[in-house]
Length: 452
Ligand SMILES: [Zn+2]
Ligand SMILES: [Zn+2]
Image (cartoon, rainbow, N blue to C red; front, side, top):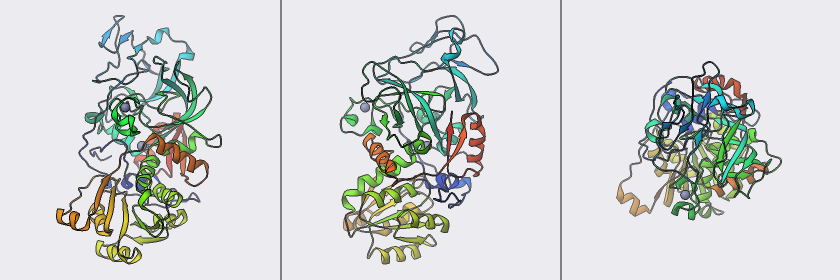
């Protein structure tokens, strides 16, 4: 496993996705495995708050004498070992939690979870205290499925520690769906038993970003599975603003991974949809895990002619089945540029760069027509554009970060309509380490999904 720096929040790249996500509609492998050095590097600057819940473990093997811990002060209230004291500087709507000793717990208070204890070591499948409702907006979900992606490998390697600084041990899993188990006193948008998918962030609803619907930029969010306990467990603590009620026909295991990769791809397409009216051209660079969702979203919500560029014939074949009108095999940049400019009659209105590195970030602006926009979704490289090109061609470079709550609602609507599909490989949660090993080795066909 090669160590790489981790980028902003949830954006996964095609480099990740090609390893994990063949996603052929007939179930056969369509995309190729990339060497791990195809992974991305980027300076990440974002940091979210830390909130520590569900913080007392009962390891399967050893049971140290845990005691009551005050997570605000970090002091042990009972004289025993105090676990998981928070390091976060701010808190969300959640109130600080008080942990309880496992000695006080019945079997009903225990849930199985996949927890990371030490960077560079395998996570541990163990029993932990179930989460508790402590705030009026809290929601506890019986997890139906938790997606596994390369971000989890990066977390295990320690890439995210300086960015999100979770307090170890904590539960992995940032792509989660399931059924509402319990709600706080103020929650009225979902009820017990509802099938739900979780927006990746538990946003506050009160900050300026939340006021304009930009959940991913919430100033007070937690990020389950990244900086607090996530969904690779039988239960997950989230909040009312994060839960999207699902159509009855959707199963958690079929949609969980859309909470991350799918949402990121959809968000970019949704932002560009207004300028992709009939007669316009959209170019997709990279047709792997994010890109193949982007193609389906383009076909579903825009009238643009869709051209897909990828190094893999298999990925291009899949792209054609998902709605691509034209495909271009990525050979040398000059050849690709010529083909794309021919197909698009002078360049794309929007290029969606799902790779963002290895030269794709430099090629993308060359595929634009005047006034076109380069949507950056994959990451790792650096965009370099002469300012005179920017002004004389009036071209734009636009960043994209996960997606809004409403984006997720819309994506779930498309999924319920059968217009966006995701190929998955389901593992029982007890086989989480096998799934992680398969993903790391490039053996995993489809998106890995853990089912408790
Ligand atoms: Zn992910
Ligand atoms: Zn907020």
